[in-house]
Length: 324
Image 1 (cartoon, helix red, strand yellow):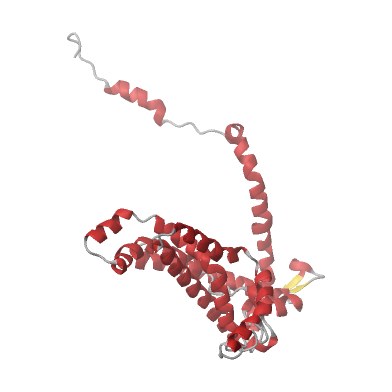
Image 2 (tube, helix red, strand yellow):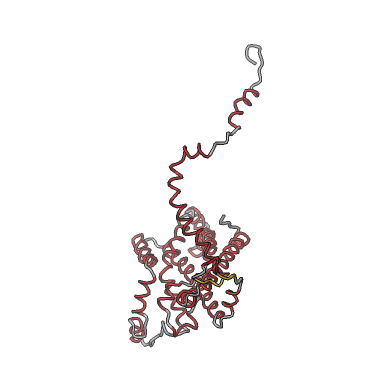
């Protein structure tokens, strides 16, 4: 009430709120004129996405036809799943799949475990100069291609190579790293660990930096030693990152590393070193069986997609962590 006259401010409030709550729908032309610079910046990425991601999907049809170059995709006979029947009827296909899974899973487990262990060690070091040098030296091999690394290993690992010369001097005898069917898979796995564990450690170190230092101080006040702080503070603090890395890598159960195997492989180790990618290269590409190569590639993509979906579900159920 003002000067004996009462009034209600609610209608005025409604009148003022009215224009704010009613949204006018803008036309595409208006939006384009306001934000055309952003669309222009997006255009090259959209063109690349269409050319190299969407357009090649047309080639997936090769997995279901008996492709003949003179007739093209539309003119070739549709055979359905006959290409897949031919793949799984190959006598060595079971062995090739087993080799692929064993090598790929071994790489995933050991690379991530070595990266985690190295990150925990580096995190505990107080000498910053040594930490920087160690991180640089262990991360550098990640940026080298397998053509370069494989060429170096072909000089170091043969029976008469540098490493076997050292082993002979200490009485361990020569080890056939590249020609023994039993040793060759471990050669692939441990060389992958040496090349990539430093980069895996960078991700875990980033997660370790994000842990609140007050948690370590509180644990120390409560009498927790170094091991107890690691068990009850550090590992729970980076558990979401561990789960995330497991999710991202679970889709690679059929990715055993084509370039690495192709460079280091030889006929003497086909029984344990031949994988799906090298089989496709020989039977699909070199022999011009493009339908077979496409079918195996599509199979790998489907299996990887299913495994990634499964890993997200397991992460949500077991670790209460969602990637999306």
